Image 1: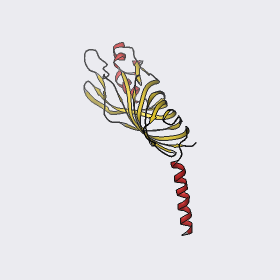
Image 2: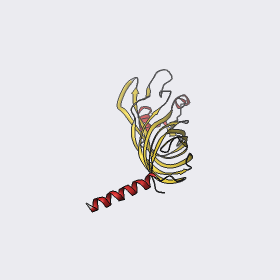
Image 3: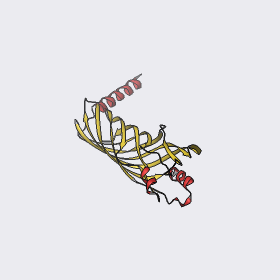
Image 4: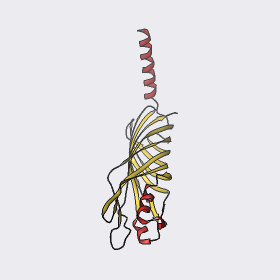
Length: 223
């Protein structure tokens, strides 16, 4: 019984200390998940007279990991830069001459290095809102967009997918409890995450895709 009382007292002290943790500067780690999609205003048509091939947008979202470190400066009003590894992507249906081809759904995946800079305000002690820009550097991809494109156009397509750096924004809400924090955000893009260099300028101009995602993370302030 004595040991149980000691353990409960230790837990209560730790709980109280954590609840009172409220510094003007935080450094911590965070990890969570992305639910992402890639969309655009145009399908990709490889013929000026008929629709030979469409990369049609799909509502299905891809699940990916996100994690890294963050710095927070300020209490009531704060700025929070972050450095994150982030998996993003989406799914497309591939059509040839108006009929879905054997590829079916194409699952596109990117691995990115993201740098969001969030500007926030604390509404009450635990609740805050934030918004800010994000720069995303594509480190690698699974190549599914290029493979599907080349399957339709042939090996002499001379197609190159570019835009390794994309710029966007994030906005969301967060809850702090001591050293722990939970954030839920939406991310959108100002620039395309994938564009194409192709011999046919008309085709190249049609293909521009942006990304969007919902993100949820759990953070822990080391100090």
